[in-house]
Length: 594
Image 1 (tube, rainbow, N blue to C red):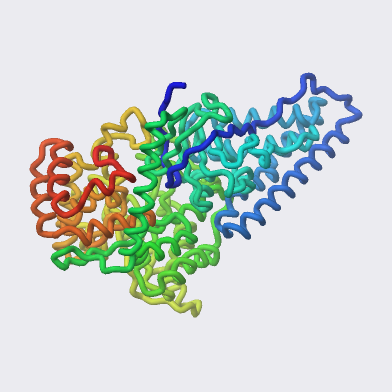
Image 2: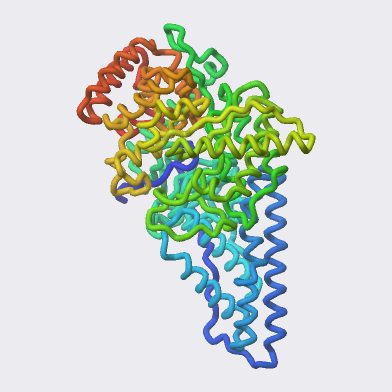
């Protein structure tokens, strides 16, 4: 067997080696024919309605089980499927097809599902793919009830004790039923880091790689795999040398992580005594405790899209307040920076009916959506203002491009402060409002913008994308997406300089902050705070405590004069190597592939 490598998206960290178990969850084929007598249509409608009710009952049971084992937020991933089973356009139209065309329930439902798929299949939008995934799950479940077929066999695992599950996509209902003691890894053809199965994999602490193309067709049950969930790689039929190498990397990573955990609660300051606050990026409230356990000094980026994506109506003020309160319970006396809805791009909730756009990342998104949807935005702002009474909540607005984005948000905040006070709610008139700087326009206007905000947070992921005109989701352009490009380095330096001169905190919450070279570069720029994923906290704490800020400043000045990204990387690597043994980091990231 020849060893083959597939690269995808790293969705959940960890390295595992084991046999593949290829799971097929596709809907069963509907029998040919499908015509019934007109006199039988009402009985067929009753049969279809009963199948839908049975499917809902199963999903609710899975949702309750997920709520008990993982928490209420994770359980929400089943809401879209329940909504589909109550959708008049899907269920009602199927019933009409049965009555008007004398079709069996199976055939009528298949027709309607195909029509829904056709409406969405014109795009590779990640959220649409999640919706299609939910639809496929619903279709399979209803058809199996109609046809009297059992669900996917999740118990045998092909007869293996421990497997790496390979599938086109792992639906929420399958993920919720996995035996985590036996399923040691997940590899899927589709998916994103924020798709349902990725979220569940991280919650269950199962290493996962998604977006691997047609892996489920290429791999057979029993094929040996290496799955590297930190670097997003799957190796099929690995050689003995590759297995030895990855076992060694896994050992080094685990040993390194144990060593780094000892640093978790030590001061986050450089060798020459400069404090650099180290905070965490989180997607769900339940991740706050893990961040605290890994030594986070608060939350630098709390993404709030989980509250709205997949919903047919926006969440109530109380529901949002409860989610923010959950994080504040973990960090009652530390900064918690909460980003307002960053919708659009690859995230759109059903209730907004967002239009199809040719360039969604340059379109109606982030603060633009919020300001155009004041009822939704005001509700979130009210929940945030109430949460401020429980801790050091700081509000951050994404994709600021104009000063008016900030001033209009302040107007809404001021109005909601007055309303809350009039209602007798405890609310402070002083609030902290910051801007996420992630466009070249905002970077160029940073000095002026600093007069209107209380802090900056540099979102390097989008800043790199927009500065270099490179779609960060396009695998063909992956080599061009380089945060160490001199143009990006100079823009970040300009933002940091403007913020520092205005006496504003300057934080970085993009992925560059979790790269040791990136952290070193940012420290050299004088950035006050870094925010990274919980799994990267210890490594970046190690970097901060090992380096000298003055040496980092000199290295950054040299990087500013570089003519290409390689020169920037070489200079930073040379300087950082004087303080840090970079070989120790090679198990979890690559210097050449930030």
